[in-house]
Image (cartoon, rainbow, N blue to C red; front, top):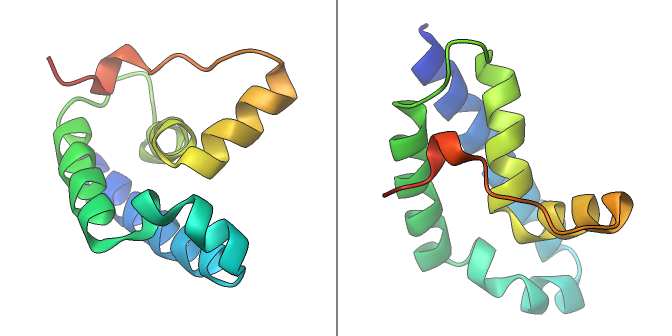
Length: 97
């Protein structure tokens, strides 16, 4: 399995696990409905496919997946921003231009 496939496997598994986790709480499910809805997941997976083709050589698939998921999944980004005390910047390597 190549780096691109490993990245997509990790991202897909994370999206599913995150949606299940958020869905266990009605309040969180409502707050993050955009991330866990079919439309939200379609957009997210399209972004993941784009990103999978642009992983920098210096990153492993797992490192790239962590960067991608931490930024793209709202609840993870919010937790990271709260911990760091500042807004997270979107990693430039997966920004669609």
